[in-house]
Image (tube, rainbow, N blue to C red; front, side, top):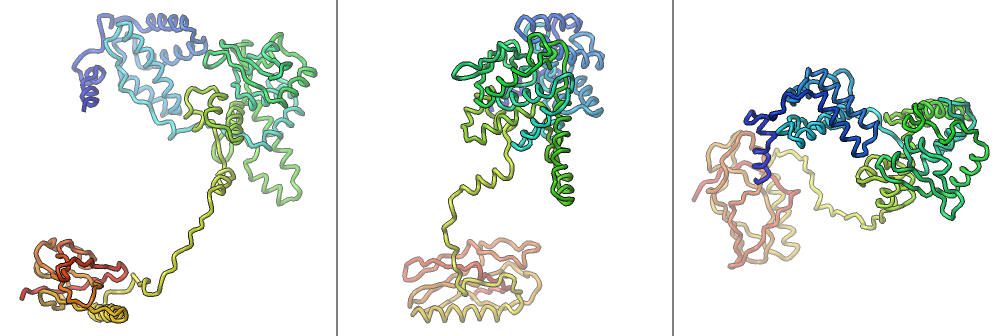
Amino acid sequence: MTKALFAKNSQPRRIRDGLVSATSQFGNRDVETLLRDYTVQLGFRDVSEFQINGLTQKINAICSNSSIKTIDQINAMSVECYLAKRRKDGLSKQTSNHYRQAIHQFCRWLVKHNYLNANPISDVPKLNVKTDRRHDRRALAPDEFRRLIEAAEAGRSIQAIPGVDRAMMYILAAWTGYRRGEIGSLKLSSLDLESDTPTVTVDASFSKRRRKDTQVLHPDVSERLKKWLEIRKPIHKTLLFPVSKVTCGFDRRTSIMMKRDLAIARQKWIAEAADEAERIKRTKSDFLTYKNDDGLFADFHANRHTFMTNLGRAGLSAKVVQTLARHSDIRLTMNVYSHTDLAEQKEAVGRLPQLEIKPRQETPHEVENDNQPLEGAPQRLNQLRHSNAQQAEEGNLGLLLTVSGKIEESNSPGLESCNTREITDFAAHGSDFQVKIKVGSEGFEPPTLGSEDRCSIQLSYEPMILEHRQVPMIFNPCQILTIRTRLTSR
């Protein structure tokens, strides 16, 4: 109740309802000037130039296409209309959320510095990106990765990066989880291959989380790095892999490198087919494809997915995987970067304990045909009563039923009066005493349309009394049978 009352009286909602104005006395200030001040302050807070440029581009696009010149013209409707138009033109929901987040952060800054009384677009919701995925990645299988490395090492230069250098980049990314920009910042001084625990370090200025990140290297990767350093031909003065604009001044498309190396590896794999049938089977497969049948991509960032998936397959705890992945939220590690296939799921289910419970053997009298028609209900009722009496006699039990009221068959297609009810056949088991069952006509629910064939146990039956003792009524669901009767009082 308190939360609902707070939401109702919150400032953004009051602004949306027209109760108060979002603008302050500075509402006529132009967006361009304040946006410049905003980006300068971001630079003081160690936000990278790349991020600042991205935010500026998005905010300028929204304002220029929505005819927003001053901050008092910023409103939720204009922003939503612009983003809806961009999505109609092909913009993904995830990118649309990035635009929304950029203008949202700018408005929060305006509120904090008293340029606005409240954030005018706080009610613009984030969209569900799960319904519009455009570029989800997948983890490479061990055999796929091995063939990728072989194809890269034997291949020619792509994007001015030699094949052996590309192979080393792929290995580092898949065994450290480093991103493209972090790989592109590595220098010879970043490697420590001579200590007992070989490591590779990314400076805080190039790490996504702005921290100095040191990753332990696998012994095989350390040995491979040593051999690669002996044969490599430097293509940059200091950088080992000049692929990032942040470090070398221009971007090299690592996705194109992966796509071409995968295509070469796939062609070789198909050519190795033993016969024509196998070749056709491999051609139809999505093995080593850049985009598989599920729409998942194997670009350079997929090597990071491969790193975390392999950690999970090694049986490490989720916390250890999260630490090595350098994620602040374990849900990102588990839900986005960790992948499982059907073979792993089958193996996991196979480890469950065996089912040693034997199936219950049903006796013949417990099995009843539920699909038997209701025609000949009186004869059916007599058969069941005869069977119950015979069972009681065999068990040395006496069975005597006395019903209060006279039961008459009714061939009427419907229920004609409130005294006409549906009753069910039942089996009441007791000892050699007289059992009285009292069926009262009061308390029944009124007849309803379409209830002629309904089976129900009425709750208005009074308890069975046997020498002042309550005797349970045992109903077998397989023996419930509906007949139409007319009850008349004596």
